[in-house]
Image 1 (tube, helix red, strand yellow):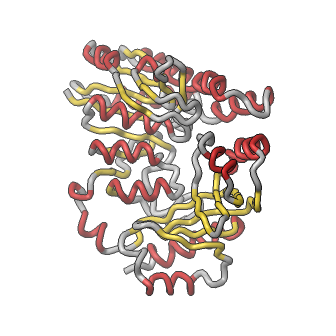
Image 2 (tube, rainbow, N blue to C red; image 1 turned 60 degrees about the vertical axis):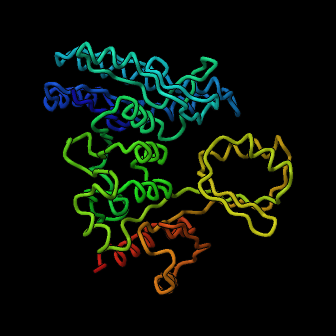
Image 3 (spheres, rainbow, N blue to C red; image 1 turned 90 degrees about the horizontal axis):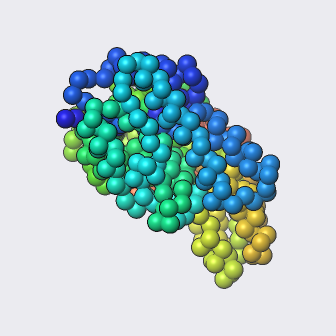
Length: 393
């Protein structure tokens, strides 16, 4: 019997009407003999509202209590979707992350999955039920509720797909799939019909919001086909799989050097003099660092603005030396093959961006990364897309 895991993000379950719509679409598209596991995020803005309430109480709330609070959002979504499926005539049951057997380490706020023991899900699938799971959450060895950090519901879905040996994992979101750039900022961005794990991982680490890097890592490690598609249309979107299994591998992988362009705005750059207190403090820092580099005794950390209060609190409480802090930055990453070691490509890029103030350029094996002023983001993004994707031969 085929098993399909479907994950629905916060915007997909953002209202009662949308939850009913998803239940109705599942009733229409559900195939006989197919076992379904649905992973849900909290309704749109719910997590932000719960976080706001916590910070009204405390400037630095306990991470354990935050996890207890924030996991309420997914529990609401899972129960409402299960009720909606009941109304469509389906037998369904909802589980929290801990009930589902998502086992994690003890790092509150950004826990890592250590194992999956989803025997209860298997039992309920065997009874013919649709199983709904609260994403983003798990349970530690001490039986404490934990959250998986940003994009945690994506990670939950792919991890469950791995354990269940699912035929497919579908990630439903508010866009049609993976685009060559953010279509909200680049009008001519194109839908990418298929992409391999490595390039998708590079996009995810470079700021693409469609799929979290940890979810891509799971899919890559366990060779799980993942399709990113719209929850509003249920139409085919972007299929992510190994390069060897891509249907249009030759055309897609060789004809264009740049596959897509990712970006991240609202970044803050901290620069610290390296000292023992800083190193010890980093061991206690459990949120993501977007970029970092070390040059001549100065450690530079580029983080998302939502982590500013956390790192400022750590800086004050531990008393290490701040060299500089600025908050006007955005990152743009060109993602593709064969671009990082080409001096001609670098020269053309520098010439193209001459009118912009580029703070720094770095590269990995599949990306060229730019740090620029946020004010120039949209114009620079569109120029790069036009040059390297729209006009590329």
